[in-house]
Image 1 (cartoon, rainbow, N blue to C red):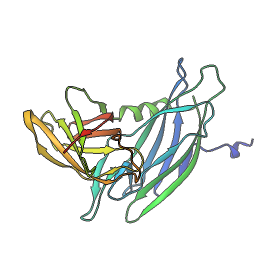
Image 2: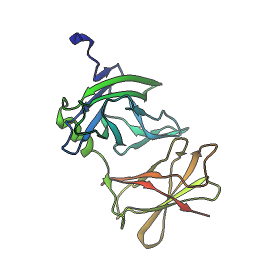
Image 3: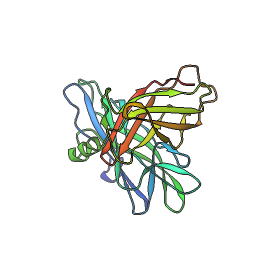
Image 4: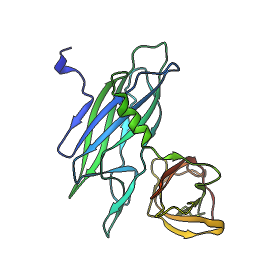
Length: 251
């Protein structure tokens, strides 16, 4: 293969640059990697649940060699939009943190990612790219920075306490303790087909806060079991995340 024919780990456009990097596998076969998304000034992109307007990102690593994805993790989003629609996402450089595993005795690991994201300024456009990265060729600092930027895992005794889905599945209520943090906000992402709107926050008992979110969409054939939800609470002090929260039954 000629040097110029080598699969690319980077994609560039006027709006965004995408870079796929991966660390060397650990002794147990675990691999940390990152997809860095470097937005041009004035451009925005979207979180897992983009909100009322936007394009949900997808990162498909199923074509990778000797690697299985364990998790994709996003930094905490913020809210932006206008009088007509609110979106969840990012207005500066960010990275999606990836955890993978391989057979420690297997062949070299090659990550192949099919990426589809939306970027928005005056207009919103889709961006698609196929990127390839060989494990151990990354700048370890870039991967570490992606993981360092993730929300903290919540303490079960505080932070996000639980969730309840109304009987008609039109409202989700999340109960949390904010510890007096300023400007708390809440973001919820569910399985494919589920989407949630902007929360309304009210004071609850014992210093707790109740966030009520409209269910914007749900799968047409959603089963009776409630969906597992990833919940991120942000404030001026930082962000915490609870993953795979199973909501109880609400009124």
